[in-house]
Image (cartoon, rainbow, N blue to C red; front, side, top):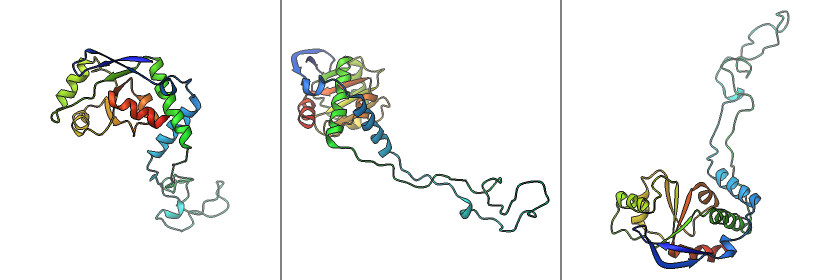
Amino acid sequence: MEVKVFDQTGKATSKKVTLSDAVFGIAPNDHAIYLDVKQHLANRRQGTHKAKERAEIAGSTRKIKKQKGTGGARAGSIKSGTIVGGGRIFGPRPRDYHFKLNVKLKRLARKSAFAYKAQSEAILVLEDPNFASIKTQEFKNLLSSLELQNEKVLLILGSENDNVYLSSRNLKRVKVVTADSVNTFDVLNAKKVVLAESSIEVIEKILN
């Protein structure tokens, strides 16, 4: 699959790059994508939620009313979950939501996500951006030149570039990652995936 390479002014250059069919041209596997995104979202959960149960509530142990003759249900504790102010019945407890997936399956999921973007022509290749300083306006100008100012954009760099990353940090609809840290959720969550020219080789090397 051949795509044009754009420069930072938004103009198509004379260069073209070939995206590997083994990564960007496979038949997407929806179940692999589902598992990988599920794991990503689960791993982001802190799992620190906690509600007090009846053993942890401060309250009197006096019997509320006599056992029989009231016509109502037995009530032995003001800390019961059936009484206002009592403990939570089967409330949430701290837990770890992490679960394991095989590396091959995670690679297949990322390939599938890239394949979906390639099929919908949502991949754009850009010459490696080079900012002289940290300027958010410069990054906004880059998006405008590519006509992506109103889109949710994922920019994948070949290697770390602090000037580019910090220039994009205040933009809500933009995420900048390196090719070795991109995940399935970020690819699918973006409307447009912008690949820096140097990132293609890294992505294909990792996923093949």
